[in-house]
Length: 265
Length: 302
Image 1 (cartoon, rainbow over the protein chains, first blue to last red):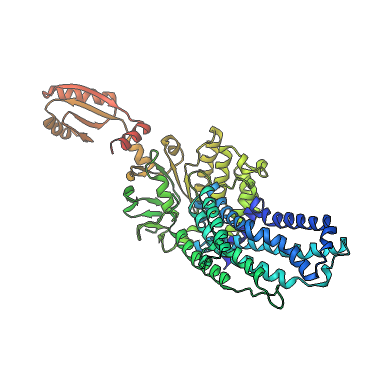
Image 2 (cartoon, helix red, strand yellow):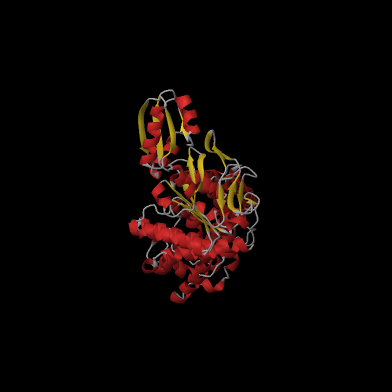
């Protein structure tokens, strides 16, 4: 456990000056900022629709969720998986890392967990900023009715789903980035996978849930489609989420065997 | 086995079908500076990577401090510091941050980073990005990283690579100081014999994965003692005659006999003696090999 902790601290120390780390913070700040600005400057028009508070929150948070879940999220995950490994490829530091008196599993697990941590941070900020900026909008435009509905459940559920459904992609991309030092291969495969995932998810192919790349889209689509007494109260652990977690677990173990067999030439 | 910091027993290593290291039996005594010599591509770096368990060796062929490496990886690595090929440095971090990162990984105090920077003369460049370092500075930072855990055994792969003459002398003095004052064992690889000659107490010469010579630096020097080569007819009886006359024959081919050279006068006396006894001496000359030639000879003929 101690070596895992040490390796995690080191991962943070190494990456804190890189784009990968700052992307986790800047991405939610920029996207939420832009959406909030849109809701602020276009408040006249939006107020004209006379949304009930719940729908207003759904529209507002859906703007970020839609952009994020559909397109940015898969690429963000691909980029994270890449950069956590690339820091070692680029500097030719794998040999140094594996010549340290630390067990290989900790080194590997720390890298994986750090990528998970970055994604979590990013989505956590998305949820928090959506919540905070929503209330900020209420202060700036008092005619809004953001204060009449508590969106926490919606935000927590939606972002938890997005987070869990992205772990499958992360594990695939993590292995690709572990194997290949260059950017194009994992990025190319990830790009094709993402497009394929979005298409299969949208045409409603029966087995699209077996493609990790389609899981974030699927996870969020169901959140939108299901209509019930409270349309925003949806279950978190659905089929896509379980698929994603199973993918993540299996590929995580496979990745470890790749690492132990990895010859440092 | 107890006296060796590193011992390999008939070590073999292949990449696919290609044999990189063949039947290698290194014996690096504790406290020695072991010069690991060989031309480029001889298998030096591969051997060092095996010693660090970066490449997996067959069981019971590699022992560090008497312990088998595959089953004692972490315990051994705790006592070893290494610089392999190009120094492993994160370009986006400063020199100091690179060392602090190493401190984090090794669980040692961060203050060590400053000590090491001073030791390798990088204090002024401590807060400069490592990607902006010159090759020599990177090499020094690499050495600092290898030394930071105060290891008993240092594996340095061509540590003077890219250093200017001053830097080379500094590294050389540092190695001598570490071995004599701090009782470290150092295995240092190089393709330059002159480099090794000045620091090493022991030498191993490797070519095409095979160890061609191993011994103390004095033993290597012995090999390069001046020789007297005599070309003459009737070589077999001449050989017997020379032995009878009290000389040691070092080598005898079908054309010439080699004996140790002692002095010009002695050479003349032997010549006279041979002629008086009916041999035709076609040539008699002193052959002196410097270590560089010796090294070339050793590595070329195999």
